[in-house]
Image (cartoon, rainbow, N blue to C red; front, side, top):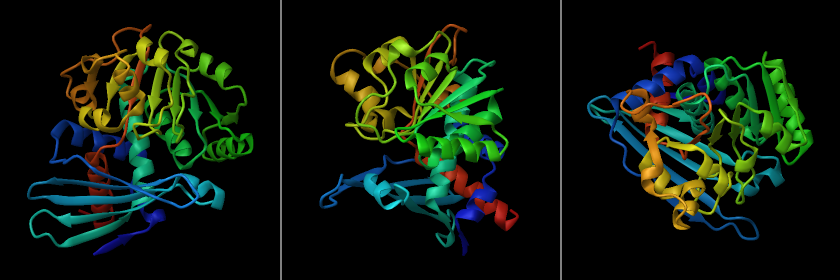
Length: 314
């Protein structure tokens, strides 16, 4: 059995290969039960969440991810997300690898957003705004720069010092970025807005979205969380990673659904329909698109297989 720590996991999941692996998995499919989602009480703090995400390819691989999300970990200067991925043989059940779940989650989430942007953003999208300063922020910058001609990168966070730190990291990796303090001004000029926060109230207003922009929402993953307001949802063509996941957990869509502002039929496509060409993505240069991702177990399985086969030379 192989143990892939954070550094090894990162080295085996280069974004070009990971984006391609996730696209293949969405096109080919796998068995993917709805994930288990449990609330854990943390005395004196916001509740934590335990996620169990199984998926398998019959006769090939079986995987399950165990992830915990502790929102107040920032007070301890710790990541909000911790986890491990267990990959087993789909023929014998023997354990093949234990993979760093936090690194896998961050990289596959960013890769999935970039994959969606390939179909939903304008082909000439050049300005990227990342909202949030957590672990995902840098990954989102790297992944989007693999699929689109990004020239201008801005980072916004509630703490400008943390936003500057993310911008500096991105710049050091060859993606020049700047921290910004005015979220509205940055959003109004962005071709792509990628939000990765644990916000419970909208950060991005629909009135700020310019024609042709693409809004990527990957942070808020519970019914009571939200990164966009009603106007953003009403102005945009709506797309999701999976309908099952979105209708179970995506507050950005479930709240306007409950209010009667949209219906389930307003979701134009899920990612599998985009990558197979069954449903078109962006329909015009003026269309505003919105992609809501809550994470799908097949994304983890695709990444875990890529990491394992890379280190084992398969």
